Image (tube, rainbow over the protein chains, first blue to last red):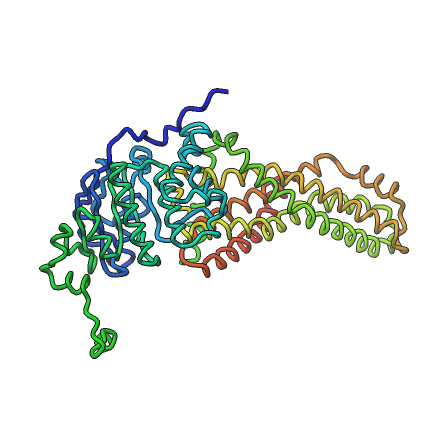
Length: 267
Length: 250
């Protein structure tokens, strides 16, 4: 029986890295304003790192790019297509590495990686096997193919999530806190992987992170989200000597045992 | 007012999910493995409890009927009473209630957990519609397996009644007489109506449980709350639909 053609629901990866544009994007949940008037352009092939205090709306912003959230006002564009439109996910290949991995717990690591290719009929089972094994090899996960996500450590889960995204050959790769809850060595490893994948596949990369080292070492540009607004947009070099007092306090906080912050917050 | 809006929202989202799943009907042949897995979970694993319960429901029905009818000298009609009750009402309703408690709750728990732990979001970002791979195989499986479960429930219930009718001293009806009356007063239409009811209830239970699971938000606590909501909604819908479907089939 001849192989079925690829599903029309996906593009091929000959298309270049995707560009992102946010225009006056605002988001509120009830009366709570999460994002306010965010305007931002991310160039194709760029690594953009978005930082900010916990609860500042970084992950919400990331979800707008893949259409998991719709803006209250303003627009998000991916390669000129409206990010909220379902058709955009068919026109632009986007992959997201979720904070907790979001691996399919009922599937083995191998099947987690193969799912996208199988569902969109992107090759025979032999082709899929080659692609999955290659992705597992790149991320040093060769021995885990038959394991279930519950059998993996935190660092391995993150790497499997990255491998799963990699198999999709995305034009836009989104990472939500990829180094959170990892030890310093594993954080550095994941940071290196993100940079290598961008170099090797020329994929536009957006990383939401609290990790200062990651931002300073691999970002082309960094944005800082605070009080629902983008208060800083610049290069890592500019970030090393921030002019804005709020950015400096956020990135280089002083530990003052004589006057702890939580006591100041109480008053 | 808020509760009424929630109920209407539930109806709306359930119908929307049904339309979404139906729009992917063409993908079902490629989802053979998922379909077979769901047939196993919905049908095979539910079979023992359906058999046990329907055996005892048939038995109790024969016992109660025998006790009541002995005073009228009408105990020879126990076979028709057990037969009609099982086929037209108790078989379909019991299968549906077991599906809600056993399969529906498991479906809601699984899908709610996938939603809460962002597995459903991951599917969406991969451009794989959750309705296609999570809902459609379950709906197809329930349509295939529920009639099988309902027929087995009817048969086992009739045999349960026959055993009681023969072995309880104050009834003492031979199986030949019991089944002869059962056959005489029962039409194929009675069994068919029961199967239509079971099919309707089973389909609605699985659809509602899928929808509640996929619309769960929050953390582990909400998964438990979603399961409770799904089972309660399923039980209410079974009994409400039972009246209307029965009336429509009369």
